[in-house]
Image (cartoon, rainbow, N blue to C red; front, side, top):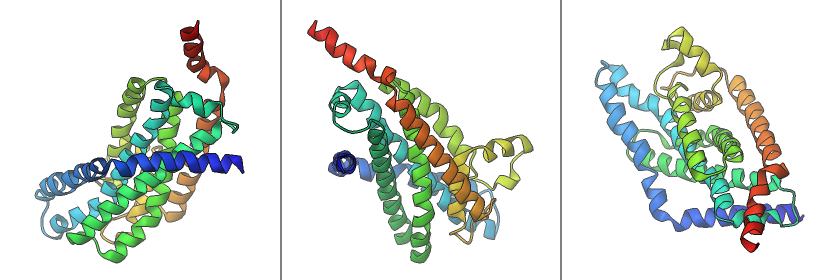
Length: 263
């Protein structure tokens, strides 16, 4: 019972910070809208006929997935932030298993990502890019994708010792994950050597799962394949992140710094 109370407290703390920063929520809509309306329109202008008008609709699942990816990874940053600024020491001495801290952060990152994705879908429905029914259908695959993205963020954060370290690793992964996922173009049209990279990219299956909810977006895998890969990867990533975070050697520097200051 104490574990779940701790999870509720940590998740509540993270979400309260997010909703207090309303400017952050609003600004998070700028990136996907730029990609969709500026870059999407630019690329679409090179197409002809129905392809030109349909490209923006094709981009919708990928842009929503991008919102989930950035939101979840940035939310996972708090795991490193708390380690660097001392908050983590108070969590570590609480009477709970340490891996529950990681689980709490991943849950909070998932909810944060879903809130931003829902806001984006509302905007897309208002401007007429997606039907309301399609927007609602996208929420279910978006949740599976958000969990996957949060698991990736938790995995990176569990190995990061500083904020700078997290930023470097995140930037190293985030753009390959996005560009090599089929978010901007059908996987079937990629060169053969890039297709193999897409196949081992778990984010690709989240993007593809959302394509199944949009009739104009051609999917590359079956729904069963998408769900299986996302489930297996997310569980594996969360387990590894929890294992890494639970190791005492990972947190020794936190307490050595305190001891050193007292001495």
